[in-house]
Length: 512
Image 1 (cartoon, rainbow, N blue to C red):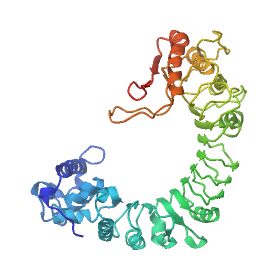
Image 2 (cartoon, helix red, strand yellow):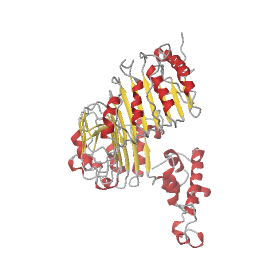
Image 3 (cartoon, rainbow, N blue to C red):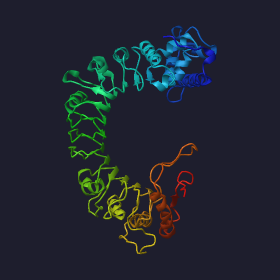
Image 4 (cartoon, helix red, strand yellow):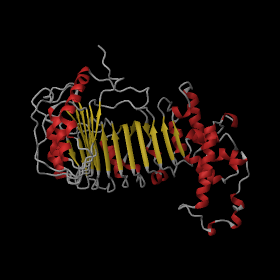
């Protein structure tokens, strides 16, 4: 492969990185893994490397002669792709090291600016892959905006036995990933496989994927039967992610997946049935409108994320019995209608709870924020609570200008709760009562944050902007501030930090 450029156009950052990496690597090798000098038995007599390890210097004396070729290969492997390629321009030794670079991420952004022609980028990819054939451990092909005309040839050259991680994103729905890509040798070595924006039709003749532990399919055309064939051959699988797979209607996960611990199903809107017999699931993430979910034995479940309508009431009612060992629970609900009821069932091990209530306009008048106290009462080990209230109009009863009588619950000391954040805090009576209840009963509380605007805010970068908010949200924010001053500030214990976030003075300033 011909790499354009000379030492004069090599950026200083690449040289500095080479020097720093050489120093760090050489020092580490001299001192050993634990910081002690390596055993004399492992060092050549006289402290000099054997003649077989000495390489003729073909580059700058300060760098190329500092270490043998295997060290340069290691240094190249931990450098960013652009710097590693540019360093190859310095000498033949660096060029040989570059051609053994085991990790490649090839995309339009990595190879050229938008001004470069697609044909030139295609040529570069072809050259790079052919010169790295047989030595790749990690390959990331992000071909958005790049022709896939030669993709089959690239895969035959680059995906060889010994590869461990493969990310293939052709961004061409009609492209059918060939099953021959996963040859015998590749099936034995590959651990991580991510395929996206294409078609994948695995068959029963695929063969065992003995080392595959992580499988990600993003916007892939694959049916339930085809996916089941693939999963049945991946007995070591630990993580499965399915995103926007429109042909999936029925998902069946066989019991042979004894190692499967994490299952994520996101935006698979046509999926109707999930039947999992994997016995050791510990993390489950589901968004969508799946009508029938069967997870088998859920005693190992520790992390659960659910995004669907009316899920808050369902979670409080059903989950303590079927998933008693939960430690992290994230709920996202649209148009929650039914308030949460007080129940005797407990989340004995729950440490982190996040609830997001989403509504385009306003919640049902029958919903009561104060009913979320039920989750606190049921979670004696809870350490962090995050509540995100997203609504354009606040039509619930306001604590400002109304009755001064606030509802009280029997005292229940929460000894583990340390951090609380409520985003989209308004003057709704139920929200104010919830905040007051927490301040009075969470004896270990360290901080409570009340953000009067929902959604992300701009960072410290002056060029970024907060998301725009409706007039209804901006009109409600001053009432929320008033409610905090009237009901909350005076009951904050001296050991608790109260953080009140007002609308952004720059992004949310309303004009007349």
